[in-house]
Length: 195
Length: 365
Image 1: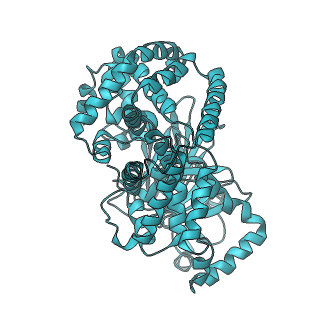
Image 2: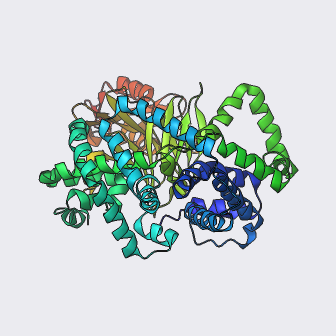
Image 3: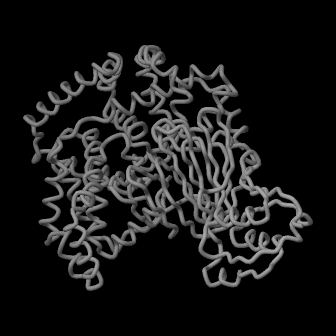
């Protein structure tokens, strides 16, 4: 768990009601939180509302915040709880923004095509394989390899035991394994001169 | 310690590596320590190269494919809504209402008028795009990049000062967390380091490491240059090759630089050459210097004074020069001008060898 002194002093400033610090914290983490949100649900409005809630709540309760967590971890865990709670509460009232979701999917294909020119076809295959995994599996892989949380942090975030996180992760990786084989071998050539 | 750690990875398979915290940290967020560790590991266990390479590719790819896409406008939309709910514009109102900030604000306006608007905005623009895989790094590290036209002063978290030349940048762990104050430099900078014996100050410039406790010195390490130089203004610094950094006593493989000494490190042949800076600076304040006025004084007395003033070792034969008497003072001219004058007067010669001055001559008749 990374608790940096800078986090600590940011927190301190923030708790005193410094809006610059609030803006800084938002700027620093909003993108990452959005990315995370989209792995838990594809309901755009719900993600946006949850992030807005999260920060509003943070601002309104700043005096009561504990100092034990790193800001980043705190935000991720709170966002997760919030999204899950909101999914429960708004099951019928909030409908997914389908037009948006289609657009997003199209953008993602475009992105992939651009990437393909630079990278191996196998990354694309890996992406496809990832989509076959459950949301939870995708979430855990994103937390581990994109957001760089360690097993213990993920366990606390998802309210699982360390062992369950390890198991879930190995199982997901095992499912993706056949794609590693391809991607790994081909990219290996590119990395030979790396050291 | 690192050897024991290395052994633990000796039997790892690709799938073990991709689930290991230290390994993932290194791939996604490498720092100097982990880079050196894995480099050393691969050197000691070449049979693990393939597993490490493959695991590295997998970790990178997993990060890449799980990144996902987000609509770019969401971030701003949420922030605008937040501001509405909080009440006022966060960026200005509170800022101006702080009385002590009024002076600063006035100064800011001057800066803005001076065309620095762009520079001030640049960092926040960076922060906005923190969605890159660098996102994690930006929370741990602080980077100062100076693009202006003139050298600029910055204060570091430990109150040390750094003057960056245009086009130079430094990077360090936020707040200097950790057991050392460590930063990496690209370009040229002058450091005035506050003394802290418990937390050494370390500058890593390409392949050369400079370690100090509290002193002032400059480092020149441009990427396109074949040489790295370190010049010491005050205090004592330790310089050694980055490759030796994780050996038990890296200092023993490098050299100590005293005030007014410099080292030149050639990237090509990995060799360090110690010499003196072009214009050595007195280590005493001007008032103290005034005491050094000599009337008919023996040359050894004058040379001893110079050693004290410049903190430079001067090697000479005391007996030889005892009979040479001179009138001089140590103010005004530079060290080398003075040496020229003295040597000419006593018909001696001097040279700089390994950061010391060596004087050769004959007895005065």
